[in-house]
Structures are given as C-alpha cells and as structure tokens.
Length: 225
Image (cartoon, rainbow, N blue to C red; front, side):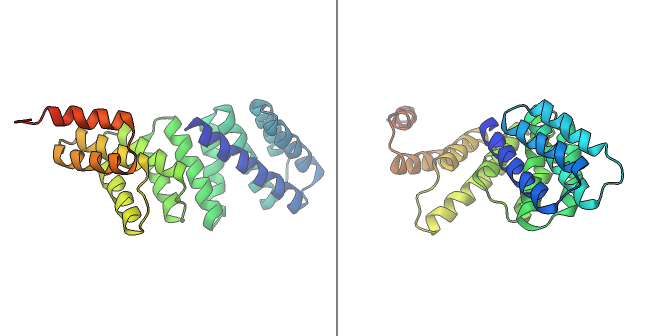
C-alpha cells in the first residue's frame, strides 16, 4: 500500500506542476511552488512542504493560487508522513474540484485517514471516491484492508463476491486477490461451505502448489475421508 500511495503522490505532484505553469501565478507564489515541486520529485518531502508553506504565507492570494498551494501542500505532506497537514490541505481542495480530479483527491484523503487508523473516515472517503467514478485497483485494495481492520468481514465477503461475480459475468478470470479475500472472509465468518467453493475457484483459475496444499488439507479433515 505504501508504494501505491507514493505513486499517487507523484502523480498529484506532476498535476500540480502543470497547474503552476498553466495558471501564470505571481512570482512570489509560483517560485516557491516550483521549488516545492522540484524538491518533491527529488524525494525531499519535508523541504517541499516548507516551500509550499512559504507560498501560503504570501498575502493577497487569488483563489487559483490558494488552490494550487493546497494541492502542493497535500502532496508534500502526504509524502512526508504529515497526515494531519495532508488531510487539512486535501479537505480544503476537495469542494473546489469536480469529476475525476475530485475522485483522486478523495482517494488521497482515504489513504491519509487510513494511515491515522481512522477507519470510519477512511470508509467515508472511499465511498466518496467511488461515487465520483474512482474504481482504481489501489482503492479496492484499501477498501478491503480497511474493512478487515474494522472487523467487518461480512462486508469484505460481500464486496469480493460481487467483484468475482462481475468478472465471471463478463467472461473474465476473477482477480486472484478477490478470491483470496473472499476465502479469508468466509473462514472468519464461519462459512466453511462457501470457503470450499471459493478455494475450488481459486484452484481452477490459479492452480498453485500452495493452494493445492490448503485444499487437500481441508479435504483430509472431512468426515469419512
């Protein structure tokens, strides 16, 4: 999940640089933001955040300048591990965006809240991101992880089963991760018959040695075997 989160921060940084160039910001705002972007690309997140804050200290900012500053602050803070600052910046940005861009910011907020182990708000922002059409693989992974952390394995089973059914309905091989999540959730919710059926699907689609070992071990424990 850390790698996925870093990827999104890099993409957010690249998008912010484009906005800095496109908006024609005043030099006293644009210069530190350009420096922040360069520092973030170089992996110097704390220094980038300091430069974004330098831009934020300029008086008389326009709405476009404030939006660009908050985007950069969010990206730098999230990379620096300052989740509180990232949340503050992204929540300021979110109401000003629409469509896919808003969905990406909602996803970043979901990751930031998950880093704070705030599972109710993590779920809230996941739902907002999905409502805006964001169905990225990393968001699905975060959703399953957050559900597991909050102990909601019934929800994990429901969502994984829905993804598997959708794949089968489209004549696609179900995702291996969805099958594994469903089998685990069925084990945790006391559904041995469902787990056995899921393991059979897992073996059919991904006939790995480890999965055969799990399946045969279960088979040997059946009465009358």
